[in-house]
Length: 463
Figure 1 (cartoon, rainbow, N blue to C red):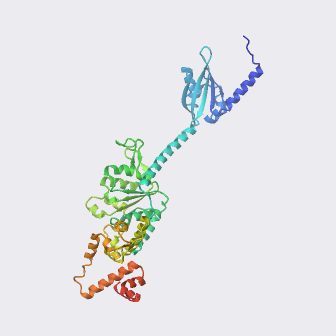
Figure 2: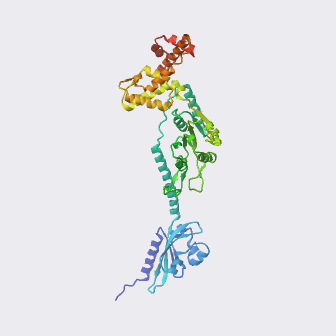
Figure 3: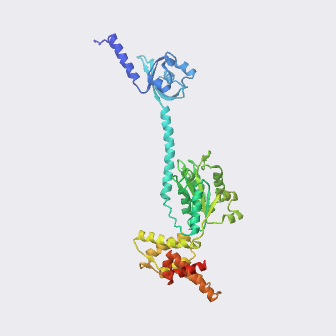
């Protein structure tokens, strides 16, 4: 059989082309003989490992291992096993590479060459770390989205006409500019959450999260995991990957602890630690996590009385009560009642497609009413009146009987007065209500059937 011979020039050209192919490889190529002596390395190997050809060419792999130039040689393992081997190789330059060594056998099964492919994983490790960080961020964003889905930070609608409310807003604006803890006190429904939102929106953290936590609505056995989170496997039923707590979800924003007086004593201790050290620890975790979050707390309970009864920690009280904001009940803010009635009447007319008005007698009754549920009760009442009344003008007959009766009872305080005193008190009340209802002297005087100058004189007399 005739065989085609390759002349020396053609062979040299072939080898030059073969070397050009090896040099163009993005992966590193490392070739040893059957005794682990280095025969060839390409330029990609130099780039990936940081080693120079002159440092390894002609050197035995065992010597390179012993000198610490390589952490472990796949070529040596191949010479022992005669099988392709893959391992993670480290270099004293600090770089790491995934190496795959493949044996080249002669006809007798002896290894004549070991060709090693070297792929840089230093960059891949960096990408993996970045991916892990992104997964943590994704978990955080998911938690934020879930929290925001349940609790949207709506525009703060604060109606303020009364001097007491305006003074509160001025104080809230001042404290918003400094990064300190705020304790908001007041009866149920007075607007504590709205003031907390107002502080957040006017603070340096306004672009960050506002997370509300109702301490009284979360079961005691879930409270710690909700606030501080947990690691995977922390308890039966825990999510496989663990869960961030709301302090972490809040990020660099504001966490609003509503009904903080409902916290059990054991949780009070842990909250105190957060306020003192700005650190939390997840359930089942061993490391502490730094947090940078502003705390605003609120309660309708008498915390000082609770301290006396050992129901609330005194040290936590002083930590929370750095700047107290006390919101008076609605019955002490008569001018706000008028403004709120107008605001919610317009709001619910628009929402439900009506154009209803309040009879002046209805306003008289509602001004006299004590509002034990404060703004929340007023809001609900106005929606009920708009939806359920049969006529465009809402009359006293549309009011709940309980409200009407309570106001009638409150007008029975004239029994021990002389006629002159009773007339003076009634006149004073009617003038003030008319002025609050109308908002100006001319219309108030018209409602009362007197001159504007007379109303001004009498109003001055009774104030």
